[in-house]
Amino acid sequence: MNIITAPSIQETISKIFMNETESLNQIDGLDKFFEIETQLMYEIHHLEKERAKETLRELIDMLSLRSEKDIIRSIRNYYIILSSVMARKLYEMRVPPKKAFAFNSACVELVDKHMNDSEFMFVADELIEFFVSIISERKQPSFGHQTVNKVVIYINDEVERDLSVEDIAKHFSISTSHLSRIFREHAGITLVEYLNVRRVEESQYYLRHSDKGISEISKQFHFCNQSYFTRIFKKYTEVTPKQFRDSQHIPYFRYTLPNAK
Image (cartoon, rainbow, N blue to C red; front, top):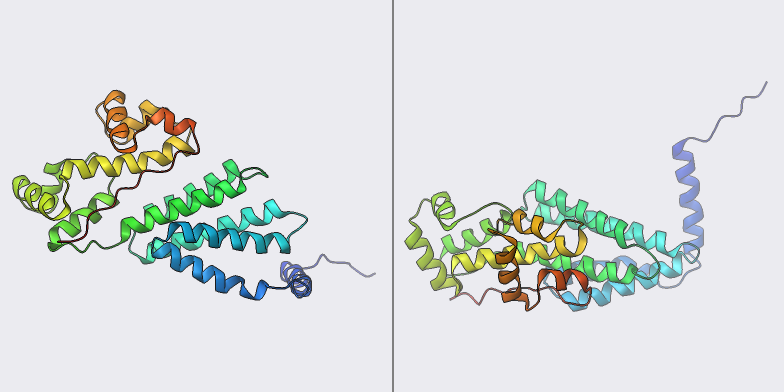
């Protein structure tokens, strides 16, 4: 009696691999896919946001040729792979492991929430915005004072903590007055202002991509109340948190530290 056994996982993968290889041989241009993806990584790393968006669209067009029958599924899978690659890059840039993992989870949640026929290009742009934002946080500041450089990185890493000027000064074992003076002298902005700027920047993602209430988000970023959060948010973005949440067309606010002195 012959016993018919199911193919092993390895055999199944091998069969799919051979079929895919054969079908891809019939599509022109895919040999450049990884070359273009390398270009995308370069643009993200160098904060070339608009170029990166165009490059990702080019990759999406190539994926569409490869997966005519199930384009959305193919693009969704690629977004998730790309997010995982970026999370690894962040870890290599010494982003705290928890933050790198949270970054990947946030990207997957964004993809799952918006991935449909009408919004998949919106997802592409949002991912690039998110990638560039996180990478920009890790760019080593080059101010003429190493403590100021370290403080900027520290705030970027701990932006959701209830940090005060006193907490930061204690962490770096210097007086609050000295820290406040050197930070403003080199960064061109007060330490309190920079804390608020970073909290506003980070809160935008929760406003646009989470179901949390505005009051809850204001507490998450340690504003004393929703009214104060709204005032600070509008100061930098020129819109209220509700207006930002309600309109996908309002661009993200990004603050750029001045050139090092």
